[in-house]
Structure formats: structure tokens, C-alpha cells
Amino acid sequence: MTTAEEPSDVELARPLLTPEVWEKAAWTPPVEVTASAVTTGAERTLAVEHWLLTAAADVAQSRSAWKEGALTLLRCGARFTAVRIPGDTVRAAAGSSTAGVVDAFLAESLAGGPVIADHGQRSYYALVPRSAGKSRRHPGCEALEPGTWIAVPPVRRTACTNGEAYWAVPMSEPGLLCHPGLIAALAQPAASFGRADSAQRRV
Image 1 (cartoon, rainbow, N blue to C red):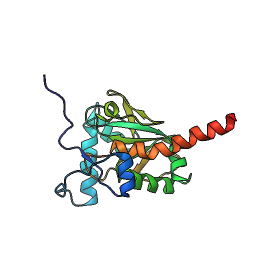
Image 2: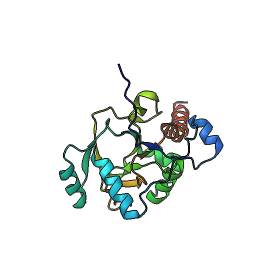
Image 3: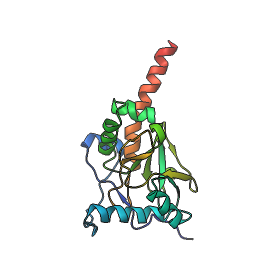
Image 4: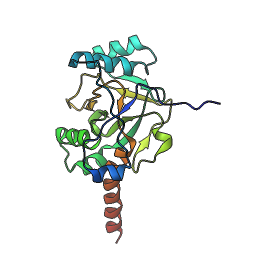
């Protein structure tokens, strides 16, 4: 019997933070990889779209929806899955409710790994390798099960406008995903604060 492995074109976002954060995340930095052949912003966007759309039920229909500025549904479990982080948790960790500040915080904390903000920023979805939901617990978060459909905005929508879903942290390269340990490191302080605050209210 063989064991399924992650697709070979999946990479993890590389470190941008301090050694203390890596220790919390229990992360060993990956071996250096060669630079992508994708060179321009437009080429990167097209390559990311192509990679993501392999998780669509109908590629042509999903591509058309993105061209019209609509969301499309992508299936977790084949290329990637997602960890849902409550918006309040993210804003507490960022120390701000301003979308631009929160987005910058996520980009730094998750080493540039891709994150989708849903309508009204009620939740954030960090895209992770498909095995992440089985291999690690995420305090205060939810790892989506394989087969779950996630609403994904157009790749080019990278700013908060009228409360619509958008890419809070765009996918910079096809298959470049968040490291699960960094999500745990991000959520843990907010979860601890929430427990302490709840305990104070009960006193």
C-alpha cells in the first residue's frame, strides 16, 4: 500500500520573522529552491490562477466567474486545504481592526503565505498543504476537511473594497502555501488572551 504525498509543486512560505517565532512554530526552514521561471506580475497571476483552478469542478466556468469579478468554489483536499481563523482572533493578534494593517500583519506572521478574507472579514482562510488538517491542531481555528468547498475571490482582487471577499495576502507563486506552524503561533496568543479575559469576567 502506498502513502499519498503532497503534490511536488507545493512549497511552504519562507521565513521572514524572528528565531523566537520559528521556535514557537517548530519549523525547520526548507532547503533552498531554484527561482521560478515565472518572471512578470501578469505571468505570476496567470500561473497562480491556473494552479488554483485545478481544484475547480468546472475550470471554464470558474475562470469566467473570476473574469466577471465573482467568487468561485474550489475544492479542498486535492491541491491544498484551508485553515479558517476567526476574524476577531486575527484582529486581536494584529492589534488593529484596519484591513490594511491586518493584511500586513498576516503577510509578516505567515511569511507571505496566501490568505483569503471572506465577506466583511468575519473569517480568514489560510491556504495550507492538504495534510495540515490531519497533522496539526490549530487553537481557536478550524482546518477544513477534504472535500470542503471554499469560496475564492479573483486572484487580482487584493484589496478590501465594500466588504467583499479578497486576498488579504495574495499567493505569490503557484503552490506557495502557509506553514501550519505559523498559523498556530499566530492564533495561540489571541486564544490565550481570550481564555484569560473570560476567566477575569467570571471572577
